[in-house]
Image 1: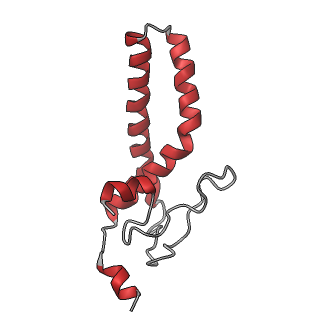
Image 2: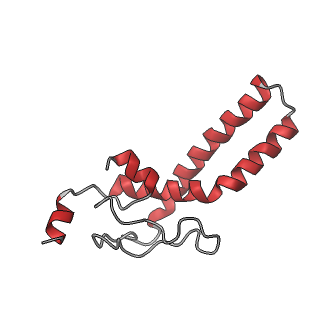
Image 3: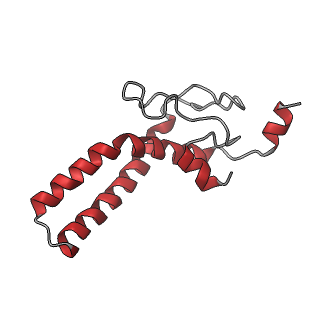
Length: 124
C-alpha cells in the first residue's frame, strides 16, 4: 500500500495494516483512537499533545477547500455571498469528522516511517 493510500485509508503509518481509528464514523466515537496499532504495536501517542500539529494541517486543508468552494459559487456560478456561506457552513458541518481524522493521519505519517520488515518479523 502506498503512502497516499495509507493516509486516506487512515491506516498505521508503520505497517499500513492497522486502523488509526476505532469506528468508521460512529458519532459517539468519532475521535477515538486506540493507544497502539493492533497489528504492529506502534504507539499512536508517542508524547503528550502529539496531535497538536494536526490542527494546523486540518485548518490548512479546510481553509483552502472552503475558499475554493466559495470562489466557485460566487464568481463562477454567480451566487449571493450569504447563500454561498450557508453552503460552505453545511459542507463544513458534514465533513468535520473526516477532515479531523485526515489531518491526524497526515500528521502521524509525517513522523512515523513505513517499515516493510515489521510484518515479516512479527509473523515469524
